[in-house]
Structures are given as C-alpha cells and as structure tokens.
Image (cartoon, rainbow, N blue to C red; front, side, top):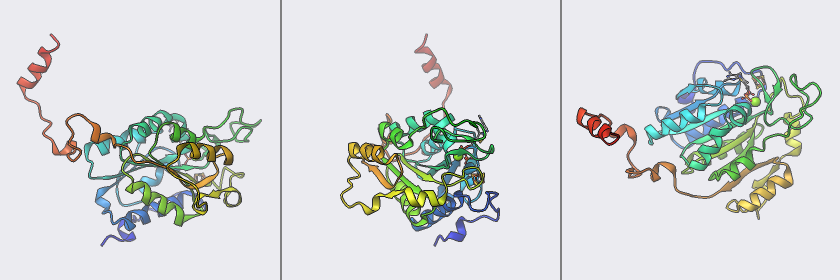
Length: 288
Ligand SMILES: Cc1ncc(C[n+]2csc(CCOP(=O)(O)OP(=O)(O)O)c2C)c(N)n1
Ligand code: SF4
Ligand SMILES: [Mg+2]
C-alpha cells in the first residue's frame, strides 16, 4: 500500500520558514496517497521560481524545467503516455506572465493534466519584483512608486479559455487544497487550481492573516452552482477573485480522445512509431 513515506525524499526544501509552498507540497503528497497512485505513475513538471523547486521535493518523476514552459512539457508527457498522472506546478510569474499563452491553450485544449499555481502575487525567487497578479499600486522592489498595471485575473482567464475544472485554495487550509487537488486529478480534462500561497519574505501585504480575513469559501454556499459559467464570472466579479473552493466544473471531451486515429485508449508509447524507407519515399512523393 502506498503511504506518505513513499512520496518523501531526503532533500530539505530551501524555502523560507513559513512559505506557503510547504502546504502545497504536503497537499500534493496527501492527494496522491489518498487516490492510491503509485509514485512511479506520477509525474510532476514544474517551472522556474521558488514554487518551481517543488518537483525536486517529492519522490516522483518530473522535471524542474524552464520559466513559463512547464505546461508544454507536461502536455508532452501526457500525450506520450496517458497512463501517467501528470501534474504541473509553478508560480504566478511563471504561469500568468511568461507562460500565459500555454495556460490559455492547455485550458481550451482540455488535455487531462492538473495545473497548480502557487500564487503569491510577487516574483519570489528573484527577490520581490511585481508579478502579473500584483494589484495596481502595489509597492515592490521594481515598482517603488506603485505598480502602474492592472493585474491578470487567473480565474477570468481560465473561465474564458473554457477550462473544464477551475478551483482556488489557500495554503492556510491544507484540508481544502488536498481535496481540490484530488478532485482536479480525478477530473478527466484540464484542471486548474490556483492556490494563494503567501511569500512571507517579500509580500508583506497578502499575508496568512489577510487571506484568513478576506477569502470567501464557496464550500459554505449551498446555492452555488459549479456548472454555471455565468454565475462563476459573476462571483469572481463580486469578490475580486478572493474565493476558494471549486469555482467551475463541466465535463467535455478530453483532447487525446479527439485526436485522429486515436481510440482513446492507446498512448504514443504503445504505438509502433518506426518508419521505413518506403514510408519516407511515399511521403516525399506526395510533395513532388
Ligand atoms: C526565460 C527566463 N526569464 C526570466 C527568468 C528569471 N526568473 C526566474 S524566476 C522568475 C519569477 C519567479 O516568480 P514566480 O513565477 O511568481 O515564482 P515564485 O518565485 O514567486 O514562486 C524570473 C523572472 C528566468 N529564469 N528565465
Ligand atoms: S522568497 Fe517567498 S516564495 Fe520564495 S521561498 Fe521565501 S517565502 Fe517562499
Ligand atoms: Mg510568485
């Protein structure tokens, strides 16, 4: 039986004490164990940032890849072997700045991976510059007179990109983020989980206390309908996006099941991909 011990490594994370990313690591490990996934069937791709280090801190396959490019790699892994559970993780800079286009396309494509963003509204690794989710007027090392830009709203982007599972959590609520990650992994299609994950060193505004006081938990709202996209937009507007829980979920065809010649069951690794001389000759002759 798989236990948490199987998902642990001897490497001690070099995150600052109190960093929200510790909870996200614990939640991913717990979700995997609760879902009885073997570590060898689990892949965690990550980008660059403090958050991106996460792939080195648990005993699974994965790559600490390039800034903003982890989603490309994660989709490639899933396309090659559908039997793997593929989770992609990174920061707000990684996913909503340099990597934003991959987020939009993975969401509309509906490929069966889970994307977790540790959103701390700042560039942590590079020591506290503004990020795409820093609010207007926010004081950072790179905006000493206040951020002149309006922030990206990740949930709006996910909703308008037709993501089929959208949720949000907070590192201060380990139980909820574990459940959201479990639901995201079980969802057949692209699942996006934005996690407010405080940077205790460089962000002195969006602290644990701030989130505890300001987040509205949809789990407590009995009449909230997760399948109603207009309602989800409305809720994000009303709350400025400071909500937690499952925000939107709707089943739709998963990407690999729509690929030509794909039965929905076989993976690239199951197929004979070799080409012989006459195949190449026939292919080239079609262009002559
Ligand atoms: C292509 C490229 N551009 C810029 C950088 C420098 N860089 C490294 S991490 C980072 C931002 C980190 O912020 P975020 O993604 O929010 O992660 P956090 O550290 O906050 O977890 C930047 C700009 C880089 N490594 N590669
Ligand atoms: S700098 Fe911020 S994001 Fe990075 S490890 Fe420290 S607390 Fe976490
Ligand atoms: Mg960040």
